[in-house]
Image (cartoon, rainbow, N blue to C red; front, side, top):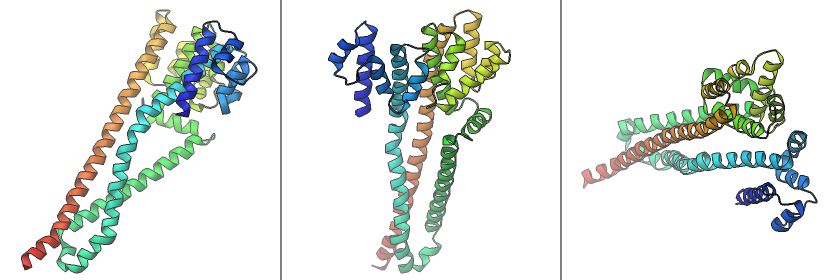
Length: 311
């Protein structure tokens, strides 16, 4: 809610500034406290104020605000499309797993004590196998995700992890998302009439997005070593489609148009990858829920069948 209000206010300020409103007029409409437009834009950068201060020598306050608003919108859209959709299946998944553990510790042990033959029943064996298999899977995933998170947040290892994932899993979601943000900032810079070299320097200032700055600095390094822009882009750790769009743009002398086309394509590509991941996750969750429910039902039938046979 707070982020949505912030994005709405930023959009209003950008619209007012883009239409020629002075700071005093903008201040009256928005009701902001900073004493200048620069202070207002810097205020919206929050903890990333150093980023704003670094790129102001290349961009106007309006351009800084437009780029930062675009970045925040991208993050908010990714959160809405991906993370929120994982809340429900994650709850079902954890509820099912915890229920199985609770059932095994309480009811299952009592059934085995009351009915000695049940200990060798195939249903109980399958239940134990599935429970321990799920426990092993969750443990491995937890360790793997913890390792990746630590490595990605460590300045000494995150670039190596990014390049490793890019080399072993071509066009993975991290690479596609990073390339999309890199291309969108680059497009905004080109639209503002900034040279390629200065545009890459601007992107290299976005320390809040280390993988985006990695691409910018690698491209700058390649250019400094005498490579052409086409050669520099071809060697970058981006998804393969980005390189095709850039090469087409350079060949037809329509780089801005092709960058814009790629940004639209990247949006569709991310949605497709997210949809596939969510679909696989839902399938895993529902299969786990179905098998667990079936096994619990079969186990409950054992004492009921034994009691009915004695009547």
